[in-house]
Length: 256
Image (cartoon, rainbow, N blue to C red; front, top):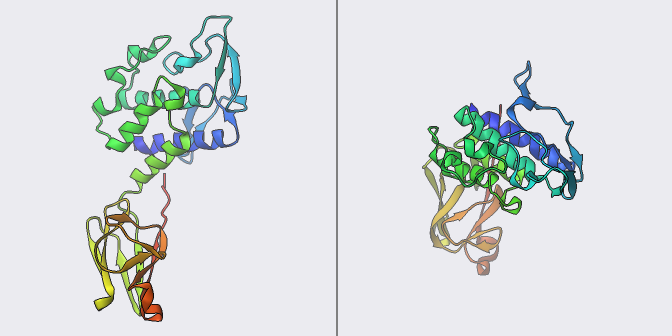
């Protein structure tokens, strides 16, 4: 459930940034779950338009959620980007996991890196890809932080683990593949064959025999298959005697 809340925050921030707005005050107190169970981000009192070239004077924000680049003397001009929201998002995720922000993160400027703010060292065990991207959100350098779109996609990919389904049509036969760590062999006798395996995230082509192509490009196994493609068995010299297999993957959405 926690990752679903973090995903919802990431979706909201990605949308906010997509229209060129920097929120500037991302924190748990500025989020609520409404009567329908949807997470809402509010309080745009400090927000700025322009996303990539904003200015402020002195340190503005909430202790613990202030990006390092925003920490400045009272009369000093500060330039900032949407990366300040990414840092605050990382701090928000950490607060949801720990219940309390570490003192090093609450310092002005925050003292980073610190072990207590390492998502790979928390009591709640996170998938390595998620821990890594959340750690990047708390990078001291703004340029080292990921975009919220990228964060959203990584979280969504994890939440959809094991929920995809591939449909493969070979002549008059239909093959389905949806169970994790299972595979199906697509074969056309002497023309060639390929195994397709589902790892819970992607469908992977392995064990190539003969001439096998994806959208007319040679396969280099193990190779991730695109969401929709044509697998061809047999070399180009065979013309219409080649075997064509349509491959399509469902695109489920994260349901919160």
